[in-house]
Length: 379
Image (cartoon, rainbow, N blue to C red; front, top):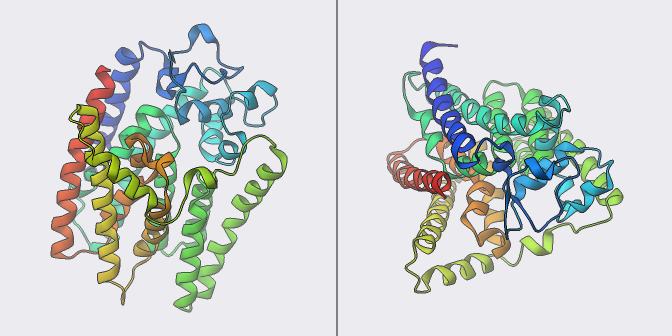
């Protein structure tokens, strides 16, 4: 690894690892379960000792709690594991992050939480290095450029680290897919995207879009791996739907007619509420909508010469447009779920207007990230 990349990796490790260390030592009082935002509404995983867990009172908890529950019992052998999941059928199909934690933690219940937190810190570092490599391949950018460090301004990355969800892993696998495609390693690229699909099933739409795009370009041999990479995720999805009885598919809860959720969210924002929480909520949502609009405008301006990165933006924008308040109600939800919006903005082809717009988006994103982390540390 070149010295410049080592320096960037070092900065990413220092910042992500340093903030995680502060959270662990002070905010969570050296209790690793603090990273998983465990509430007292759902039953605790049978593999978590109540006396050693950090439990937030009068809260339902957050998604990290559910990922940890699955990671501690990935085969769902204990009946208490199912009982500890709010929607087993929906949660269990997103097996990628829990399995990564289980394997890296060597199946040890004490090590698995540390492994899962470590995965997200490693993903931040990997993203910095992958984007640096991609910028060099695509735009012949000087390796000394600090551009890839803009990853550290993405709010969804910090939400994922603080709450230990799967989103950074999915985004890193998508970024690796782009890098492998640029290096003409299509089979490895499809395997990376396969991993992303197992992390979150919405990446299936990305894989199908890639395949269609390549078929339209008459690149049949390149398209085949991306069709095949969906098979493991589709098989896993079918297995879960057939064998896990409790829960729902999550479609009705999360999706509606295009634009309905966004309009409802905007109505909530414009209501007169001057609390700092309401102001920050509105700030984050406008930031997301602005970033998505920038992606959409870039697609329109490049419609005759689309890049594979543009293609990846299309399902993202479509999913955002049909998202209900279940997703859009809270900044910690949509900032991490649509983390890929910021990734793609970093990778889109250059133009003067786009470069300036990107700088503006990432400037305000950095403010949101700093505010979120600071508030989480002291709250």
